[in-house]
Length: 530
Image (tube, rainbow, N blue to C red; front, side, top):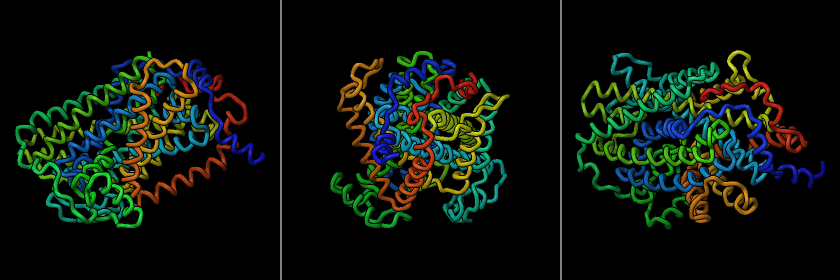
């Protein structure tokens, strides 16, 4: 194959008409309505971001200004959500952003998007599992049961008691691993009632969050909100050495915000927005169910935007109560809301909140791992991944090999990686993916102006352009941290090598073969969230 031929192959685009044809001939059942999709989005959004990372972002970066951080991130996600809504209504496929980029920017970009989505969904599930572990440990302590502290954190990570004193260093986060194993097993069995179970858990989770806001409001000390944005601290937080990239990132932040550092101050509020970006990951998970939506042109935008609006309102209110009950400096732990309800001193309420958080985080792990298997399933049918990832269990009618592999990777990350590393890498992958999605809207508007778009992004092209710019801005803030940047670049490098070693040569589009039509003979009609 000539070099010119290779260049042409890696940038080949999957025709929009082919994507529509695949959707029309797919065998996934169209059973999800607007309410199911909205609850699916809420179920995925409300999780570790609000139950775990909010406290850490407030303690290390933004202080009470974490409320402003949520407004910043919510605004960005609104831009991205509008772009997702247009693409999801025009291209209602199972592969989500992967399929969107395949249609617009070519195969190599679609492959990179697949790598980014593995961070967004696979590692996000691991991040949620670590948060789940924190609430399980807190609840067990209330019951006077104890897991050895060395088995509750990643290797080398400090384990602190309620007073903030280091009592041990982690070897393995065993509860997090067990949580992933349990959810993976459920996905393999593939109960058809999962959507109903998910809806019930979402209502429980919403009830817990609303109860925390309603009851916690009576215990708020308004003086804890002042100053809303604490004075900036010149030195960066522990564990973030000031290398050249970090200095460049901070210098850029200083120019834009007028701050002299990112630890508190306006710069801290902005970096806090990048950290808690994880709290919004999930609204686009609705788009992975595009091929299973009853009326995607109407229901997909409602599901995506509805989930985002509801969660943004709840987030800001939760933050206001959280930092109003507990001094923000004391919230640097894996279960900040548990810390707040313990401070309130109502035992039954503390148990209720922790049980709700555990149930809620369980549903988030379920949805994230489900989304990841759907993406691998689509990539497998495109020939970019081995066909075994689409093999379905004869009895359970689920892609069991695919699910097991995703589960093993997610469990390993949950057990051996810290919460900070997991959340930062998830955010990096998500922000990069979202920037590509916003760019895809612009590309398709130019190349396919007459394509049927039941929902059109308003204020085009301002909204997608702002989405791209804000994603890149927050991405730069996270990439300034050396360990995050280095891991991400090595990960992308290895992934691209795999594409040239396998995907390029087995791509069905490149070989002129079908990617889906006539080939979904084993997937069955009972995906886990039908």
